[in-house]
Length: 267
Image 1 (cartoon, rainbow, N blue to C red):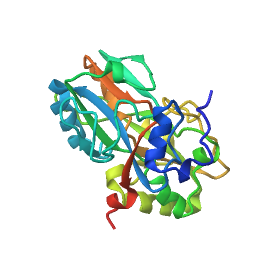
Image 2 (spheres, rainbow, N blue to C red):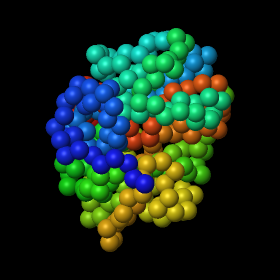
Image 3 (cartoon, rainbow, N blue to C red):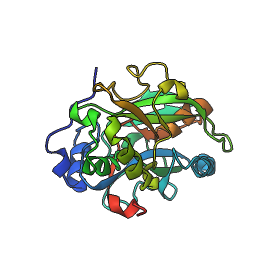
Image 4 (cartoon, rainbow, N blue to C red):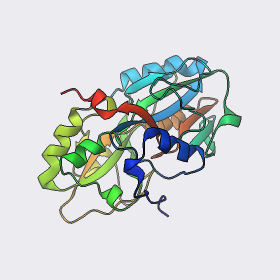
C-alpha cells in the first residue's frame, strides 16, 4: 500500500498552513509541500544520550547534517518559532529499547522533560532545486513517498551509537544526471550530492521495488537510480544501538520549517 497522495495545493501552502494541517491530523508525506522552505528530520533522545547523538551526527555529516539542537525538554526551535515539535509533524515514531512501539500523529502524551531534539537536514529541501533545473521527481509525479533503503555502508560509531547509512533514491533520466549531482552538491546542509549512482548492489540493496521505508517508485525507461544519504539514518542507529527511549518523525513525514532553502545554498 502506498502513502497518501500529495495534495495539489501542497506546494503553495505556507509553512504555517502546512503545520496547522499536520497538527489537525493530515498525515501524508511532505514531499512537495511549502515550496522553497526547508524541511527537517526529527530525532529526540534523553539528555544522557544527547552527546552521543551529537557526536554521531558530527562524524556522519552526509547522512546527519544538523540544522538545530534544542535545549533539554524544549519543543521549540528558531527554525519555526511558533511551531511545536510535539504536534506539528504529520506522523511520529516512538521507540523503546530500539523497538518501534507507536506511530502517533502527536507525541504530547509521550513527551519527556529530559528530551533533547535534533533537527537534521532533509533531501526534500533540495527537490525544489532539482525541479527548477528540469529534473523530474518520479515520486512526486506518482503521489508517493520517496523510496529509502538501509545500506551495507556502516556509519562511523559515536559512543553508544552505531548503525548503517540509510539512503533515499530518485530515478533520474541520464540527460539530467549532471544537473542532479551539481544542484544537490550546492546544498550540503540537506545531504548534498549523491553517495552513489547506478547499480544498487553497490550499496548492498537487493531490490529497488522493496524499499525499507517509504514507497516503491516506478522508473521510466532509461532512468538511473541515484542515491542520497538520508536523515532516517539516526532511526537505523536507534534500532541497532537500542537507547531506552526516542521519538522520531515517521519516514517521509518531515518538519516543515520557516527557513528558506536559499539560506543553505553554498553558491
